[in-house]
Length: 640
Image (tube, rainbow, N blue to C red; front, side, top):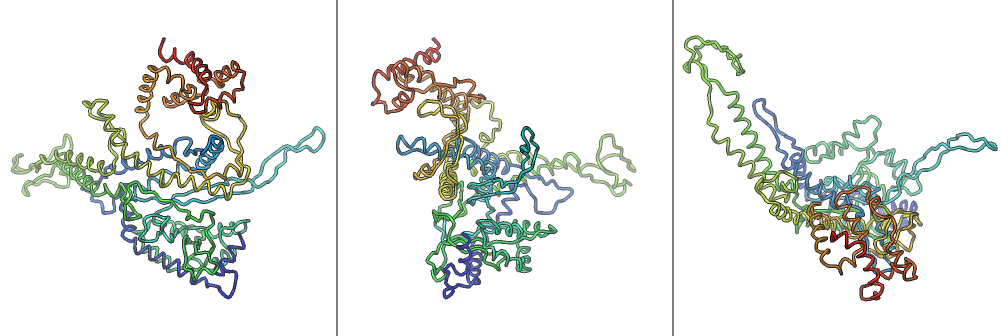
């Protein structure tokens, strides 16, 4: 890898006669960067406004005699939507599932399912998913970058070492500890992502550019490793080209547009910091600049002066390492409308009406006073409070002093207008009071509430399914491709959750030792399938559906005979939030063992026979299996 990176600085050819100067690659990346910034300038300029609306930040001046509150309508809608999507798509286990094409592929697919789900948990996908889906609601489109992360550091441990027979002393040993080694992903700021204009999907773009910041000392440490990300010689050269005054002035002029300029200021204000701005482009370059014939390249520019990397895309699948998601896609643009954009103007109107209402109430509680100039009243002490005495010269009537009362009839309409605006915002964002768990009308029936909830969840389920199709499943497939390329084989995994004791396919106890993933397990071309959207219905609705299903099954003895009641009970207990489900269930499968003993077969043979299609089962085995099921299940289900 070191050789390919170093050779790429000669244009990727390895031949001096065809060397393309570094200035040409810097010009290429910079021209594409400026083209994307010009094309998307209007979109980038609106991002701070949407962010301030969500954060309820007021940019204008404040007046002492005016109210200035921000109603949390947009904030509550966005948080409710993010919470539901994250819990739906990333909060369950497993996060994704893999299906085998043949019966013998079930075990291999299960290993891939556990491996990918565990890796997504290890890289903190739940907490990162909050930021990712939050950006999707704020800006309409969220972008994430994935790759392989390896963090190895020196670690010390104390252990007993025998120095003489029967005598040991504690010693300190140092070793290389592998803190993290696996696929990883991070959401990135949309202001740091510059896509090719005119394209809707990242896969269709000829190039994309990601701007990020790194400390020069960290880059030097990485260049001393076995597989450096940047060219070590280029990193050392970067020390002579710090961030220039031109770049500093450019960043300061973008203060109101590019929020991430504060990242640069924070690094600059640190005393010993050495910030470096990196533009990394992934995509296709002109043919005359790729003398080795490889046009799909990854080029990184440091401080707009040094080519830190110029090589082919690092992953075997040849895809860009970016994924995007839009909850409400635009059919013609990469940047889709966000929920904040839809509700922003109505949020501003609701804020204005609420502040005007409070101003009017202030005038009612502490009214203005009309005072005669000849009443000899000290106006500096003219304020209202309980028990206050105001002395006047002459008659103490309206001829000398009186409150200026206002007509407050129009204030009552403010409540109705704010409520109407709130309903309009719910229609636009698809998040209403049902999703947010607010109190409903006392006259509404339970069936009416469930009907409204189902209508709302239909739209949210589509958004969740789009998230799984555009992001969760492609990310899981990318993780599997990274495992094929970088994962050390064999790799041990542990099956977690309720599937750790009983195999749902065979009904037999699973072995307790860790499962090993080898090259044969990664060879089949499986595709990940997210399962979160199918569980998006409310827990209370699924509980009612389960009760209805039990009533239907109790009236059909033939159906009772075909159900695996151990797994059915496990899912029912988990649905009703019972803890320690395994303590409520028998840890073995006595029914399978009993049938095997009666038939003179092994439990494995019985399990494989019962997992076969129904028409292949012998009538005797089906009757024996059904009688045992009915003996233990029917009396409890029917109450007899």
